[in-house]
Length: 346
Ligand code: TXA
Ligand code: MG
Image (cartoon, rainbow, N blue to C red; front, side, top):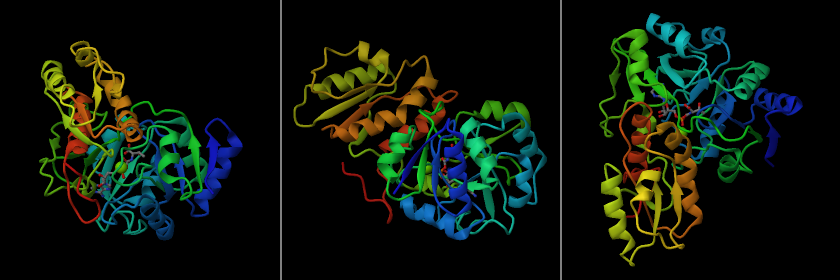
């Protein structure tokens, strides 16, 4: 049985922390998305995460801490640039890849010699981590391949019956996962874009590179798998609202496919009156990319309960958090095939 705890209830958080200490799985809110936590130093507990999510075992987990003093357990080397980034951006949506200590089980690092570490900026997460007083391995709390959860409801849908409990802290504020930066290279490399941008990182430590983006040679092992995929096919209808409106107008006239729309206010304003039967998610204004980011995953999940076979969306400006939005949308729309994820239907 999976218990539902409340973030503002101290005794609920104590019970949840005890579950973590006992090697059980607990989902909790962070400022980015909900995480599925387990004791990062307990091989058995960490393996249970992979099982509950159906996650490929070569896709490593992010270890969450509440205090930099916990880093001593996880790594013996903190490069000066990593130290500078921690001082500037922690707690916050930034994950740093560091050389791992022998205390970190190989299943947590997906067999790699490095470990991903992050200090979340969310009062409930920090309180839970402090009560458990353990480094907590926590990937996003979704079934592998599905959009990451931005509410306790999403976690419940994917994982109830498979984990000890879920701490309900309402909707997450950022809505996309943390920026992941590999600090083991001479020039740090962004493996996954997030709310902390390249420009912000460079303002603290100088030049930072982007991962080549070649999905056949991914540096973050998780990036090669199918991601953020609703049941329907996702199609990016255009690079801006005008192109998108044109493509969607044509699609609306085609009766052979049932479509859904996940679009901006600007694109909506350019469309003809929509039939009531078309499921629509307006995810914000193109002028407010933070809103688009926050609404994206919930909107993708919404279509699973509709008849939409194809979800039309649009590309967003590739600046600031828009780069992370583009990264997730491209993955949602990609046709990635591998042994652990079935090929998406066309
Ligand atoms: O915002 C977040 O980062 C959320 C919340 C819960 O903290 N967590 C999250 O975890 O998104 P997950 O497991 O869904 O994504 C972790 C990403 C994956 O792409 C994984 O491959 C990469 O980080 N990663 C983890 N450890 C790594 C390592 N040692 N080297 C390279 N990439 C690593
Ligand atoms: Mg994930």
